[in-house]
Image (cartoon, rainbow, N blue to C red; front, side, top):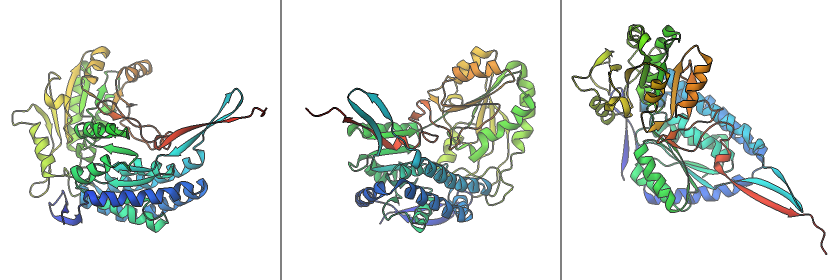
Length: 456
């Protein structure tokens, strides 16, 4: 039997071994999910909501345990890991609140009554990434369950432990057997088996653009529904009229949180030329003050990268002669550590300026005016997130509309809230997750016409 070896990224020690699922395991999982979904969709909406709230309460009782698993398998600082476990809980609560509000509509028509219904899809496969294992798993799982579907969650090979524990907690909360299953395994084996399975009605995938394209092509063969949340190379645009001190103080967190392993990371810092020198002067101490170290220490703000392969990928973007304007520190010895790095570039064509690095590396580029800022911001195939800093409300609106990205913040680096829609433009993905429409993304709209004309 093939096994997944789960490493602690901070120490490189094996913390768990997990059996890797086969295509036959996927078949059996889909069969169980199909049977469970029939009963689940028939449960009264109020009762379904009550069970999901109970699931949320059980997760809340185990936040510390889940956070500890996240620290060990993903290397996340414990403060971040606690937030992530709480976010999974909050997503379940939010989705439960939408169940009794999943309203159809009554449409005026001639000769009768016309109504619509939101019918569940059936079995949904959620393929989650390793960078935020719990929250992103819950982005798909919570609304899909709320809408009356069964869910099979395929976690990343490196981070299956929190997902497996969440499935156990779901059973403890009273969710039916087979309704929410976790299928650990390799993407080309277990993930591919779910994508191609005729019994899976929808695939929700978060990961690289390259793999997302492959999944989309395979789903197209059977016209399978798909939502994709893919890569990003998000801009952080700082205008000269902004509060430069605030913008510089906030910038490190926008690309160092989760060690830069975030598709929303603001790794392209665009600074108006007249404010460039002052911004860089303030940015350096802010970057170097970002505490790097033991993820179990509450004072730590940045941990290691997820794996040796990711460490090598990040290094490849910063050669020895790279123009590093700022370089922080990182622990020596075991672990996949890389220091916070800021590259000062004169032009935007370098790979580090346009490709997703997925590590604690940002580039800084100057711009002259609003038009150039927008051009630089849009000079990648991605369009997931971004920020802009200005005191000019008109400019904030103009630039927000002009930047081709799905999630923008003004004088903030906030990207994701469970109560607002999230998704990208261009090669950053397809569809939206979260927000008021989260449940309807896991339904089909059925139209029913009832004639009221008298029989003759």
